[in-house]
Length: 99
Image (cartoon, rainbow, N blue to C red; front, side, top):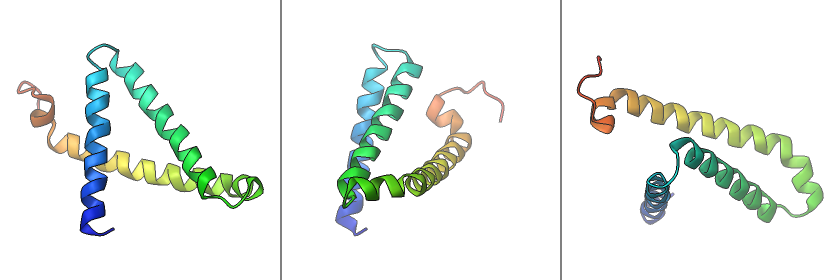
């Protein structure tokens, strides 16, 4: 990914997070989280279908796609959890939380 693409990528990430955060003002956090996960899964399925040559190819690639996408999600979630653990007091603004 070149520098321009990386800037576009992070701008998109931030815009999705901003939309989710704004949605939390009127909805429960768990509801927004579930909706965001569903939206990501739905868009991922669209992306894979649009990238496939045929329905047959999509069907044949389903298992490996689920494994690949699931693995990438686990990696990203672990990285972000590590960041929150490291910066908990900053992100959560809770000075009373023990280290």
